[in-house]
Image (cartoon, rainbow, N blue to C red; front, side, top):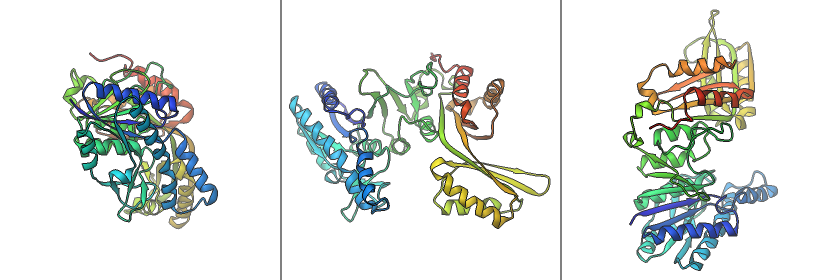
Amino acid sequence: MALIVQKYGGTSMGSVERIEHVASKVASWRAKGHRVVVVVSAMSGETDRLLKLAKSIDPRGSEREFDQIASTGEQVTIGLLALALNKVGVPSKSYTGWQVALRTDSAHMKARIQAIDSERLLADLDAGIVPVVAGFQGIDDTGAITTLGRGGSDTTGVALAAALKADECQIYTDVDGVYTTDPRVEPKARRLDRITFEEMLEMASLGSKVLQIRSVEFAGKYKVPLRVVSTFVDGPGTLITLDEDSLGGNVEDALISGIAFNRDEAQLTIAGVPDRPGIAAAILGPVGDANIEVDMIVQNVGADASTDFTFTVHKNDYDRASDVVKALAVELGAKGVRTATDIVKVSLVGVGMRSHAGIASKMFKALAAEGINIRMISTSEIKISVVIEDKYLELAVRTLHRAFELDQAKS
């Protein structure tokens, strides 16, 4: 008998019929003798609707009140699922984040979990009850309701699994696992049976939308076995594991596990600034002070003792970053500023890179053969990222998927 935490997303909870379907899945796990705790999101689109309603009154209103409003979406779905479970003979109780209690800091709309009181949930499990917990929300030391930011329900599920020392945390969604790339871009994309936390963390940070990055970080830190499965299609899903040896076969044979991409990138270049110590800090310091996160960075030194400094940011931060850089260009005596929003980042990810040379050159040759120009390159131990024109995104993904034979299952 295992202790399993199951998290169901907004699509899974999107209607009464779907909630009743979730209840039947939970009931089937319990019928096998497992103890189950369920974490749920609000119905698909509900959080956006609630925040839009709040911001129609005051777009710059109190984030404390925004959290108060947004948290009500999950309060509806936990109650509905508890009703559905009780209806099919599975004793169930619903809990908001503050009832658990899941304690967070006071950073409204992006709070971080600090502690979880698991006593009440363990008592329910011992009594044969299935607790249904609201994802995405908690409570701070002042008693105010907080929310964890986008994808926060995944983080709630993993955090509860860690606190309860669960055997597995299952993330139920509308896809049946983690794929070598987005099947909507490459129809030959293949579902992975297993992937390491390290690879999944890179995939999530590079644009894969299957799992929220904080939940993967949390699962890796607390060694929570994580499985991505479909609510609507039966199957084993994808197991995310710490152990490379458990991937099956020789991990070194699996050079690349997947291709991630991100359309939400913008590029800024401050050209012709003095090539002197501290110039990077002089540029990135004000950008950081504006609370803008920088992704890729390239610095090119010219023959005239000047340098071009190029970096990328999220498109949502592009306008603010552009204002900062234009002001810096005047202050630093730069020759000018160039910007681009017609770019995407495409990345290869795989633990096999550690033991194989030549992957970067193979990637660059494959793209060059299709006439795809690379604007920026960034590497780490298990990833290679390139920035290219957005019009080449699908061609680049399909080309690399074919070049690295990702459509072929590894024995």
